[in-house]
Image 1 (tube, rainbow, N blue to C red):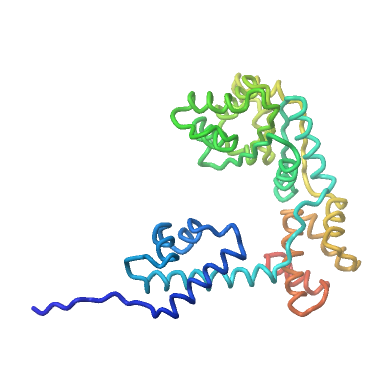
Image 2 (cartoon, rainbow, N blue to C red):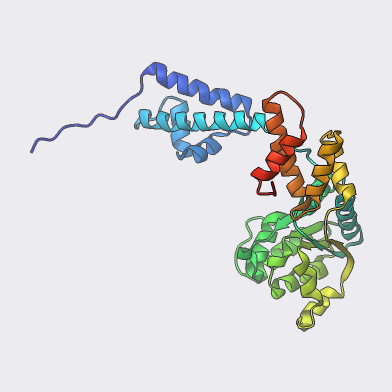
Length: 322
């Protein structure tokens, strides 16, 4: 049986230098592009990327360069697409979002518990992020169905507050969180709180009692309904009695939509009427922002400002009525 030595494919020196130059150029343009991030996004190890960049990788360089070339092509395509997509204003101070910020401010200053609840797409999360940028020791923790239990909720909270490499059972996690939050005058914001079990909600109440920090429970209508339902457990009464502020956002208001349109510089009256109507539908301000971004991209591609046809086309594309 004949055997043959298989020699790994190797790129030419010029090809290798070209790929390296492209990678280094992207790293200079975007300082967040570390070798570790490039490795993760390209499917390589950090060691391989480091050695390859220095020209000392002993393995199949051609295979590495092929992967990195695909990563470069994808990254550049994403950048070109992002450049065409108009950026939404980072934060718009709507009447509804300012109500959220007022409740967060109260909870932190007073060391109290606030509940902020209502429909989706009304700017609750963007208001939380805006408040976290302006105030110290604000920990924004988003829950999911996977974090419903006491232990998993505490894992999320421990990571959010920076409680170090907190591991172990619920009791150990609770102590680590309390040690980090005690005497901090901080605010723990529990977003999507409707996913938490009753026991997990009561554990968060215990964090408040042990540390005196403010707590904000944010979510949909079921968050508050569970606190006031006739079948709630006795220990949930302890949480309900500690609520110092309740904010309910049922739907976006016309004033909310007008504030967002002003931030986008939308002046044409027919367009404004259409967009205000879209904001009043399910999805509210989130849907409005998506229509504005997509419609503005259509307009920019033709070198003009947003018009009613762009709004209608974007609304149809996003599943709205024709």
